[in-house]
Length: 195
Ligand SMILES: [Zn+2]
Image (cartoon, rainbow, N blue to C red; front, side, top):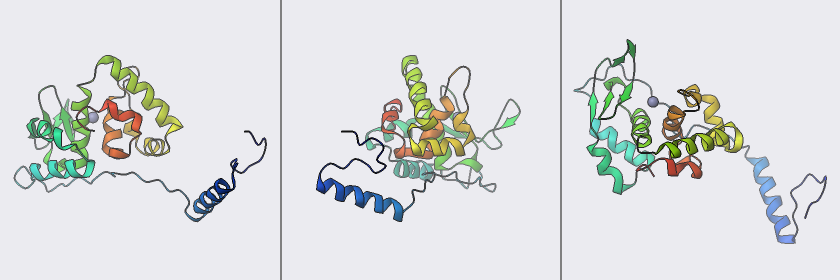
């Protein structure tokens, strides 16, 4: 039933009034603050192929991002090669994912960068139709429907990068990297072997 111009939420029964008041009081006590669930880890300029333990970084990604146990062997088998001073077309890159392997600069060997690259591998398992469906849902949620995604999308320019027309491959990877399990439920079906 509509209450017209009344500003409080429509609470029909007495118990619901109590619940609504409790919710309003709770909101007044704790203003909603949003933060990036998995903030970017800094580059470690001293890291070398010999000093980093890729195995430990992989395991930390599994635990912090909640990679399902049944898919972890798939990710353990995916070749990741450490390449010092990694560049592509003359520009330095933290990591690059190709059809057959991922290259990772040891100074950027951390769970967040790995999460981004593995999301690219996950994307490669989507059909064109699924990619298009992801682009539509991601854009709708990022421009406002999902508060946390919208917040991160404004903070991180790369989440707004598109390649070609409406291709959100980087948004797809960064949505996983920065939000992990807190990404909108509706997007998780577009991340094979990650949820
Ligand atoms: Zn990327």
